[in-house]
Amino acid sequence: MLMTTQDRFEDQEITQTLGLVKGSTIRAKHLGSDILSVLRHMVGGELTEYTKMLDESREQALDRMIAEAGSQNADGIVGLRFTTSTVMQGSAELLAYGTAVRLRPKSIPPTEDA
Image 1 (cartoon, rainbow, N blue to C red):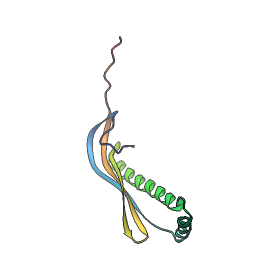
Image 2 (image 1 turned 90 degrees about the vertical axis):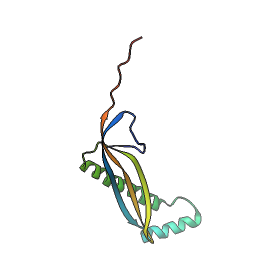
Image 3 (image 1 turned 90 degrees about the horizontal axis):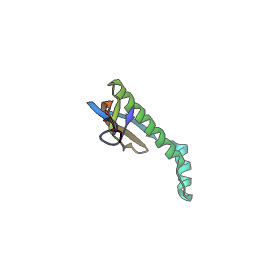
Image 4 (image 1 turned 30 degrees about the horizontal axis):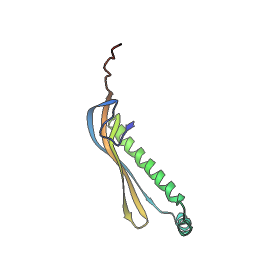
């Protein structure tokens, strides 16, 4: 599945727009991770537990969006975006969304020999 944050692909032509596709996940903070993060926050440094949680959340949201596009027989997704929102204290939703499209390679005009 081809994906881009742009509205089009340079080497592909959009032949059909299928519509909005999305994938989301909601994650809650883990008490053990919270305790480690509080300690790291006091001394400084990356909060690796949260970095890992957000990486996993992005991948899961992307996988769900790709599955939805696949069920529409899409070849690609344009205008890909991510957004987050708080659901309740200690948990957040990560949403991936874009527009599912069908594609075909752009025809390349023949080059003339000099």
